[in-house]
Image (cartoon, rainbow, N blue to C red):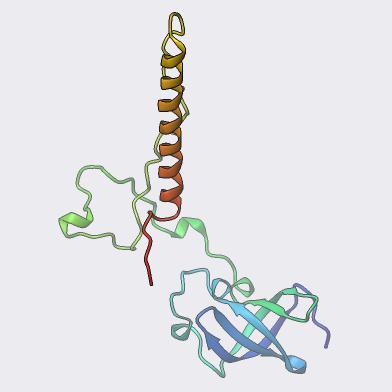
Length: 168
């Protein structure tokens, strides 16, 4: 039996891993149901939803050139309606509980982050170049260069997670 993308077939779960479940299809072909394709609800642990030896209906999502078959269990079922979910509440209103008031966040979600204002580069004010001597100009150039190098070092150290050398 040749499988095509979109086919819905029955298979038997032969293995469960943290990332998905292996399913044996007819003609002894194997496929993988990724954890995100098991249910429309969030699944933390596959062993709570599926078990080895269980027969499931799966939809063929993709067949790679090397023969790997990607499967989905959730796409064999109708998608839940969006309106069945409770509406999201905005944080910060009166009468709402926060984590510090003992109410906690019932679904374990983080409150929406407030996006900081985008940083825009602004040039530093320049002193008038009028009656500066060569030594004054060189001194100013040197101090500006050192500031720029210090800024660059600070940025690169932050990207690396801080500057700390360990000697083994």
